[in-house]
Length: 147
Image (spheres, one colour):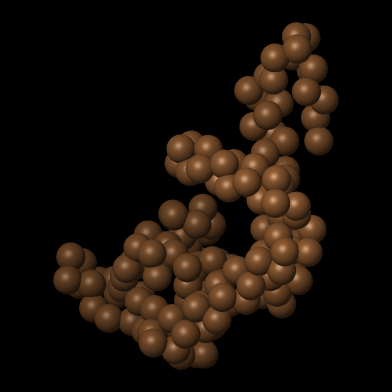
């Protein structure tokens, strides 16, 4: 974490706060995924994106995930082999195909999300006081305003 007075004054410096939030949220997400036995993977991130955005081409997925086209293609091959995604013709471009999440993929994704939510609930119950829970609830609202 970065020292809050790094900006030279007593007000919370926005850049320092941003970095502290980035570090804390990243650490929290990785910790929850590990504890819930749903580790971060390119596959789970791809499934989540297809679930939220709907069918996308490999190029669109690579762009949205900020990865190379070839890397995304390899992930897609793995997901298709496991029956978690399927391919369909792209009506906008006959040379490409769209990838979409399958029912099996939705179930796998849903179970992983439920496991992570359950892990977070356990952490809240075990580690936070009633006052901390109110503060956390307010913080969630503040974070949502940043989206």
